[in-house]
Image 1 (cartoon, rainbow, N blue to C red):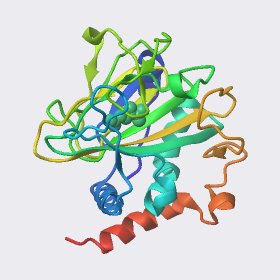
Image 2 (image 1 turned 180 degrees about the horizontal axis):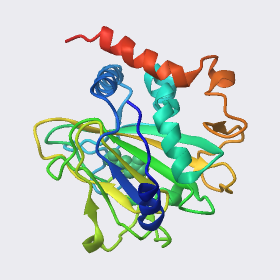
Image 3 (image 1 turned 90 degrees about the vertical axis):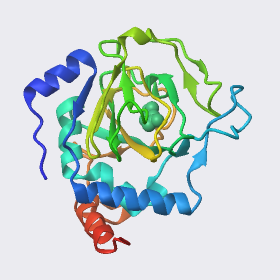
Image 4 (image 1 turned 30 degrees about the vertical axis):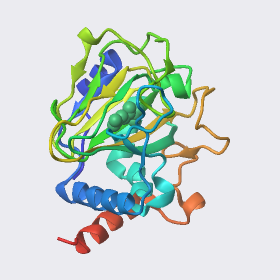
Length: 271
Ligand SMILES: O=C(O)CCC(=O)C(=O)O
C-alpha cells in the first residue's frame, strides 16, 4: 500500500508539530510486527523500565517494557525505517537528507502496563531546529484512552520545557507541561502518530486486559546540528545523496527487504 502525503498534511504538521495518519500500515505489516514483538519478548529482550517512584527500584507491580534499539535484534525492524512509504513521509516532513536516528518499542502489558511520562524528544537529541526531527509512532494494536494511547501537546514544539529525572523510569527524563492542552491520538492498529522532536508527548497506563505496543522510529534532517545523544559519527541516511537503503552498512537493500521480511513473517504465521 502506497501512502501519499498531501501538502495540507505537511502544512498541518509544520504548524502544529504533529500529524495522525490512521491508515498507514497494512494488516500483513502489522501482523509481522506483532509476531516479531512476541519473538523478541520471548527471547527476553524487552526490559521493564518502570520504577516505584524513585527512579531506581524496579516496580514489582507495573511494567513498561522497552527495547531500544530493536534493529540489532530483528531483520524486520531493521528494514522498517527503509520501507519506501516511511522514507516518502519523512522526506515530505523534514526534507532531504534524512538520517535514521533511533528505533524502539514500548510494550504495555494488559492491566500492569504503565505510562511513559511527558517529554520532548529534543530534550534527549538536542537538534538545532525541533521541527526538523520526527518520531513516527506506530500503533501495533488499536490504541485508545483505556490502553494509554499516545498524547501530544499541539503547537508547543518551540517551547523548551525543563526536564528532570523521571521517578517512574530507570533512565528516562520527563517534563510537566500544561495537560489541559493535551490531545489523545486514538488510532487503529496500523495507524501512526508523527510528531516533531519539540512536541511534548506521553503514553498512559494500560487498564485493559490486552497488551498494547507502540514502535517509534526517529529521523532528523542531516543538515541540522545535533548535540545530544544517539547521533554517532556515521549517520545512516535514508534519503539524499548519501542514502543507499542501508546496503553499505548491512549488505542488504533494506527498502526491498521490508516487503521480503513481512511476507516471510506472514508465510510462517504460527496461527
Ligand atoms: O510508546 C511509548 O510509551 C512512548 C514513546 C515515546 O515517547 C517516544 O518514542 O519518544
